[in-house]
Length: 114
Length: 112
Image (tube, rainbow over all chains, first blue to last red; front, side, top):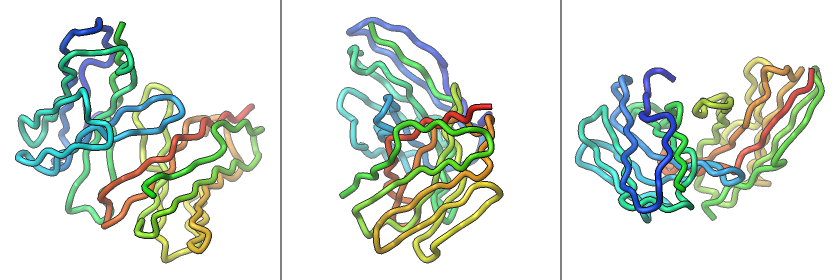
C-alpha cells in the first residue's frame, strides 16, 4: 500500500550494529504499529503507538525500541542487532475513528543480521 | 487464551476447487475476526471480516463461516484461482479492534 511506506526495504547488517527502520504514512491515521513476521509464527506485535505521546510495548519488545517523531512517522530501532532478529518487519497504521481498527500494512523491511 | 490457532499450514488446490482454512480461538471476549491476504513481497491486506453476531459473511468468492459455540471460524474460497495464491492470516481482536492477535498463516497455492 503506497500510503504506508517503509525504508529501507532490505537491510543486511552485522551482529552488534545499531539500525533503524523507518515508517511513514499519508493516511492521516493516529495509530501506528510495528510487527515482526517469521515463517510459521504469523505476525507478532513489537510496539504500538496510539498517538504521538503514547508508546506501548507489544508481545516481543525486548531488544527493540521505537520513536514516534510525528503523527505520520514511527521508527523502530535495534540497539544491538543479533542474528535471531533476522525477520520481515512490517509497519501498520489504523484510524481510532474507524469502527474496527482495520490495520493497513506497509510493504515490509527484510532484515538480515549476520 | 490470547492465541489464535490456524490450519492447515499450507494448502494446495486445483484451479476451480474450494480452499478452506480454519481458525480457532479461546478468548470469548474477541469481537472482530478479520482475514488478511498477503502476496509475496507485500504487506498483509484486509480481505474480509466478520463479527460474532452473524454466522456467515460472503464477499464474492470469499466466505467466512463463524461458529460461536465452537469458537471457530473459517475462510472458504470458492472457484479458487491461481491469482489467489498467497498467505492467509486469520486474526481476532476485542474492544472494537484493540489487541489484535494473528494466526500463524496458511500458504495457499492454486495450481493452474
